[in-house]
Length: 157
Image 1 (cartoon, helix red, strand yellow):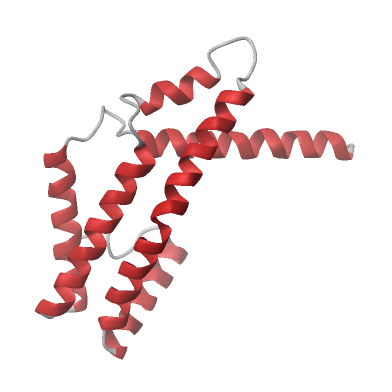
Image 2 (image 1 turned 180 degrees about the vertical axis):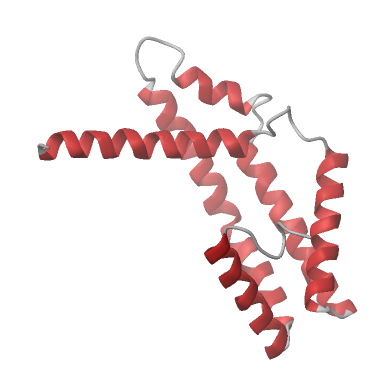
């Protein structure tokens, strides 16, 4: 296969993955999750992590602060668009791919992530650093299992 064909196919594949990821992040499969559903899921995750790591009260506060920060970042990433999925679909609605619109959307999402990153990193570091060495090892072990088996500590009961 000629190099330019490989590059073109790689570019199309990469764009598909990026846009698919944006679409997946934009909304829930059966419509947008409301604040109640998000709070319910968040509560379950926080309880599960707290239980698995046997967190003390101070560590639970740091975990909740991390959850708050991640939730704020998710909201910032979503932006003010009432229907983010429609925004992504509009890029491919015409006879040609709307490159300008796709680039603007990508820049908006990148800006949102970059703006919130310092707070997310600080909250993650505060939580992780509050763990004792055994708890930190559990986190590393759970991440390793999740990577090898496609599941893990938060996806399976």
